[in-house]
Image 1 (cartoon, rainbow, N blue to C red):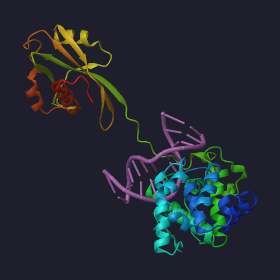
Image 2: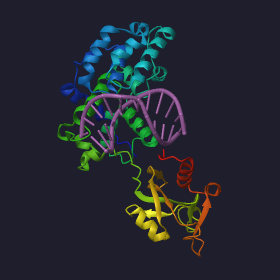
Image 3: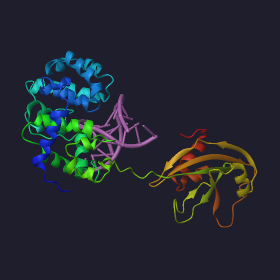
Image 4: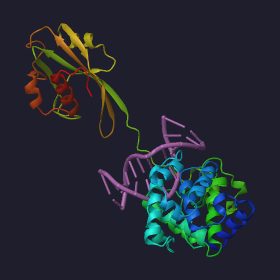
Length: 360
DNA sequence: AAATCGGGGAA
DNA sequence: TTCCCAGATTT
């Protein structure tokens, strides 16, 4: 993936757009101290601007600076977070406030690496705090920026991959100007949040439209490509029958090849078969009773098998219905559990031996 | 119902 | 290193 050499006009276009259309009067855009920016960034990670505003204002009233936050009780901090979700972040924030006060004289470190040492703050949040509050030349890479860059360069690989993410960090840093750093950070976030939205982007209002590779494909929303979903496993189903007579159980030898090759298993019926009719026909026996056991799902590497087990007691003797090919054989329960059984078959037999009526 | 969001911690 | 999760909102 190549970085297109538009560094000279990328940031200026974004900033010019921001001057006209960016948001500049949000609560955390007044008095942009590292502390105030930090709190806003943590809240905004998970919640939209409109929802955050009242939380932010209440929070700032109660904890106007890092000392107030450090001195607060955790319960009080969490109470201010109530409804925002991701409560671990409130706890991290409280812990970080204490670290700042106890170890750093209440001052944020000057470098991204330093700020990253605080719990709950990673590279993107650290860069946002330092660029916005101190105009440090540090690029962010949040969801908005990832979307803008993925579209601008028509990046065809998933940003969840380390390699792709590293490339995006490189690109983000490449476009980061050395003037108006804080406004540029804000501008990129606004661009992603208001124009370059996940669906229905307003490409014709975008300052980057002319050389946006995503726009050129006519389908910018295909970027960033979505998480490759592991192919849904097909679901198969079958009835497994425990045929019991005089405390012996009938097992069936599986074909040598294929699933469970050569193992002793339970007779299988189609999932829609009538269990009594099928059993009486296949095994020429007389059904004494049928107990339906709890169905469960067994998952293989490539498919799910929904197993509906049932227990059939038959009246006939055990010599019945064993054929010449040795495909079927009667085992005592103890003997059967000594065999190499498929896991779900073992599970069924063990539960029958315990006398469970319900499988877990 | 599925995707999303940035960082932490487990695998 | 990579994978999965927290939780509420949006699509």
